Amino acid sequence: MHPQFVQNIKKQLGESESQALLEALTSDSPTSIRINPNKDYSKTFPLTEKVAWSSYGYYLEERPIFTLDPLFHAGTYYVQEASSMFVEQAFRQYVDSPVRVLDLCAAPGGKSTLLQSILPENSLLICNEYIRQRAYILNENVQKWGGENTIVTNNLPEDFQHLHSYFDVILVDAPCSGEGMFRKDLNAISEWSPNNVELCVERQKKILSSIWSSLAENGILIYSTCTYNSLEDEGIVDFICDQLGAEILPVSIKNEWNISTENKGYHFYPHKIKGEGFFLSVLRKTTQENHLKIKPAKRKNWKPTQEQIDAKRFVLNHEQYSLSEINGISTLLPNPFVEEIDYLQKYLKILHVGIPLGIWKGKNFIPHIALALSYQLNQKECESAEIDLTTALSYLKTENIFLPQSPKGLILLTYKKTPIGWVKNLGNRCNSLYPNEWRIRMNIAL
Image (cartoon, rainbow, N blue to C red; front, top):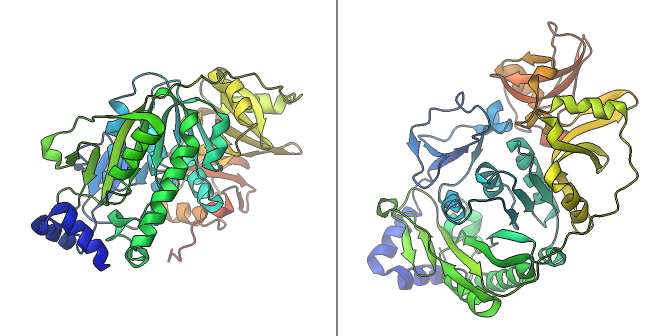
């Protein structure tokens, strides 16, 4: 490791404790998952050891090959580092009513899917990633999780300045020097340098300054990093308080969690907790802002066809949604947010929103993968086929599968009674409707 990093840790923790941390960084990383409370996770792994600060987090005794588990692809659980699940505590202790939330630096989607699981009813979550390729990964993971009050966007932080005082909560899991990931990512070790830390600090300040006006007065900012140093952690908290205008809020924790409490935030050190390095601070905005007034956008003169209206039957309680067309896809939008989503489309590049139903090619309905994975899917309206592991993996590799016992036409595939996607059964073969960009690329001996 870089000598300057070692010196910084010794200065921060002292000789004996820094040595314990450095030794922990040479040990194996624990494996943890977070289950999806809106899907049937009972058929996944034996879940015995809980992550203490998470309602849905569990440690696994060993790391399986998640790629070979169709239930992973179906969004019944997410592989997430245990320390970062602490976001739940910060959120739950200050949010108990409907809110508008922005997860600004959201890829690959761990914290976004966590927030989906704990949002109060009638809330709206925007998950954003400005790097295009990472935004597609975020989009995939959010769709697999199956929520309907979620929007995925691909925007720069400054694009949110148009949404003045719009968000009640903003989560900034900031791009950082990655010191807390040293034992999981060897590249993080080789790329670390004092200069890179300074660059990260400047980037963090720019990101926070760019989105500050979009946080409502008295709104909550959850700031986190996966690094240890005070420049990117406590130093940025000082910047938020002194330059942007905020006060630090406490988060109640239990002594047995072994989280290191600072007056400006909470540190997770892998020699003390079962997880990776992590820092989190919760702040309340104190500067005054004028609330954004949503002006109803002039809606496109779009009239759904009878086929599009009929497709609403695939969604439970579909009367709670309005039919719209987003990016050429027939989509159901939650009724309370229709005008807001129309407004947001003026300023944000939306990749996903609501419950996409699908598209029509002539009279042929091509259902969207997100519909199959939505926990609002009305399976009683679907012709379905239960498939075994070998067939499920072939499907997820977008290889040909055969369903000789199923009728021709649109079929919902299930594995262990959990939906994983669609095919069109032609009799002698099936046309896969699984997204090619989501396919398993690993060589599998089936």
